[in-house]
Length: 110
Image 1 (cartoon, one colour):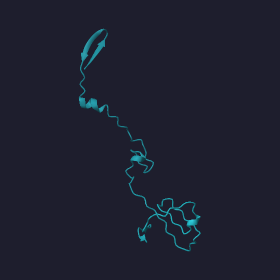
Image 2 (cartoon, rainbow, N blue to C red):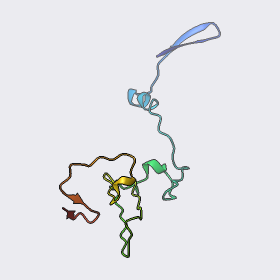
Image 3 (tube, rainbow, N blue to C red):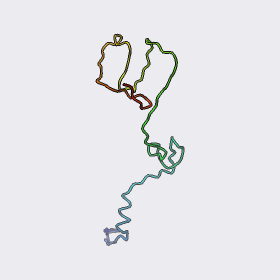
Image 4 (cartoon, rainbow, N blue to C red):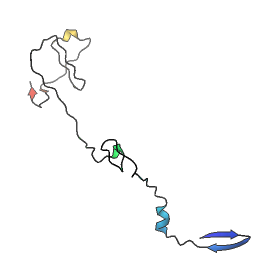
């Protein structure tokens, strides 16, 4: 309850608000109805919370056929091991202790 003073006379009034109502005033839910997702263009959520987001592990590969020269270079910044026929072209090199090489289609080369 709170004490109210009016015109020099004090009176006591009690609040009829329940504790459940009082606690709900502390919950600050934002109204997202005007928010438009940049990904799916639907209202009500941000792109980071978009239900269309799928947690997928990315995998991409490029396959090429044709004539290749031993002097050609093919760069794969995502590779864990780089191979070359011309080790003398490298400034520094380490020969990994590998017995098998797993390629893009998950087959192994020995």
